[in-house]
Length: 341
Ligand code: ADP
Ligand code: TRP
Picture 1 (tube, protein in one colour):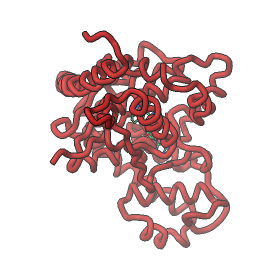
Picture 2 (cartoon, rainbow, N blue to C red):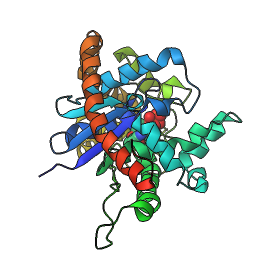
Picture 3 (tube, rainbow, N blue to C red):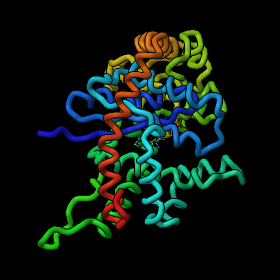
């Protein structure tokens, strides 16, 4: 039996934070045993907003190293860099030509990011979800594990595959039945950790693009920084922590982080912290965070000390990924009627 295929990726923009880990990468790790897993560093997406060319390659390597440090095993998963597989850009173009402009204009992430960019919005930023659709569709992915913020992009990828490619271009068999062209993927969004909120505002998500460093905990933050950030995290004047009170988004968020990072689970920490003041709670959360990140940081340092091994992992990933991607691309090229190569 073939195992269901999983594909996901994170942009190499700045350092990965707890939201990326708990919302996305942590879920990838558990899927390796039961699924055929592909994980890419989506560096082409990273240039949809102004970027620093001096940092792109380094950030790409450090993101790949963090995947491995978080538990992605290159013997079990295909780990690769998006820009090293030219099929991503090429399928993106083919999909661009069948995707209605207004589907892209209504993407929430585009609208949010476009506001931040003022009048300097690139076509790439608008096109971002089509490139993401290409990433997914090239690998015939069954499942795409992402945080909740990416759900709309997943819907778009499904619509492009189904309505704009398969319905129009799938070749027919002798009986006139459509043959498979692109696999329509399913999103996979785990409830816990799907939305880690900012430390400075419990109602907005923790994000790399927040200019305030204190709003997020990066996976590579040293223990003193973690302690400091948690000490300064926004609280409220109420005694006792609880889940689910809409008036207390910070309590919900920090308690949720504690549940995940300590490994104790929501029920146990709800009971443990029901009467606890913030002054007692924060050091506990800080300790759980430092402990949870310690093995990740250690593994990361080892990997960075041995660049040849990391590059070999990416070279192997590139080879495996391009074998799959080139086949899908050629299927689509043929269905669209291009002259063969
Ligand atoms: P950012 O928003 O910080 O730039 P990305 O857009 O690169 O992060 O997201 C990479 C992955 O991490 C995606 O699957 C996304 O859904 C997940 N993710 C990002 N931020 C969070 C968050 N605050 N909570 C949960 N998951 C998140
Ligand atoms: N857009 C995703 C994010 O910001 C990153 C991404 C790009 C992705 N291509 C992908 C995620 C393909 C899953 C599958 O998080």
